[in-house]
Length: 294
Image (cartoon, rainbow, N blue to C red; front, top):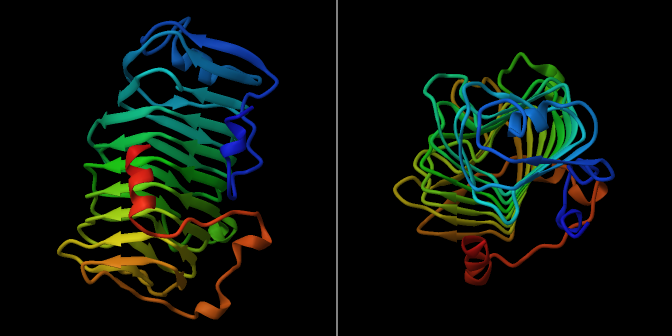
């Protein structure tokens, strides 16, 4: 489909519900026939579409199963209170959803990808105001792309690997491109162990740090826009109390307002082109306007 032609990065093998049946969301209820939960938790390959617009107030996380496309294109769907949990599943695409506001609490994420889940694509979504993370990736989850999404009004945006004890997270691979991090605080992402390819994003006035690479991870950062506010740390190679640093390579960035980048052992950082093809936009005002307008 034309949608899949937009997929770039480590999540590029995701096809979601392509070739399966169509499941139509006909109401905004938390559960029951015609609900998003009913479609997303069903077994089998499903392309999920919406026949309604509006707000879905979830009483608990939806447990998304493998081989699903949740396709909000052409609709206005906002999700409140809880989110989507992807655990030990694969081949999932989430596009054009608004995760507006979650409950409080240390485990209230908009989207959690965990427990070895793989081949996941999050595209053209909007995230703000959950109790914990907006997109958290942990427990060996890998081959994930997060693209053309907006993150705002939030503290801990994106965690990749939750602990220095999670040594299985060395296999994590995430691509993050063309996202707008608008006045958020930290974790854009915060990485341990794995590999993050971060290109053509707009980091807009973060509060604590931009990209936090730490504890044996590797970050390849290319052609991003870093517009600093009071904090100037666009990229750091060690976060918090982690006892070890990360490898960081940065190229082609547009650094504004005295934004600064810390590189570390750049010559040994992975090359994304050994895994997939991609093209880079020049980090300039044209790219910034494209990201904002999308």
